[in-house]
Length: 260
Image (tube, rainbow, N blue to C red; front, side, top):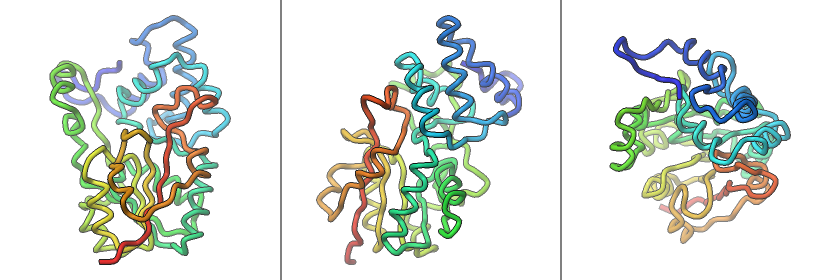
């Protein structure tokens, strides 16, 4: 994988972009595998290493040609920061329709990471006012690792989440109290108590984008009034979708406002 640190400090971003666009050559696997990784890399990032919203059909074809296991490794061990959810234009348009159907116009994304989802939604739905916030806790890669991962990756350069310039540094409750949104958006929350904290802090709709089987969020929160957004599940793509034609992992859940 491209190295992110050296004795002289972090590599410049343009050098990291060049390495990524050189198709992660250190991973080997033969010419066909390298070409397949190149196709996916060029859909996920532009030449400067910024995230893109890839065309859905093109992305599905590229993912299906990628050897199993390579997608998640690329999403985790790339030089720009981890990739969890991959918004495509059809998903973003459908997400905007769902938000409008709730009468919402002011949207707050919490735990937004690099802000890619907010930027994509804003571009496809300029009538919505979307604000991204994040605590910044995962800027250090070790913060998202288990103790075992910290030991095993001690000598490996792993990128943290790079907060976008348009992502405001705020904890969940402070962000909700400041912006008083019509709807709170959360994408690929880590498993554990964070989703419950968001639901308790908000008296408006909460739309959670994640993956099933307890991979993200907290299924114990299903005790609150909710509905599944099947039309969004079918359009979502994430780091687990190695073979989109046979199995998808996205699960979008809309939680109704709770009385305080």
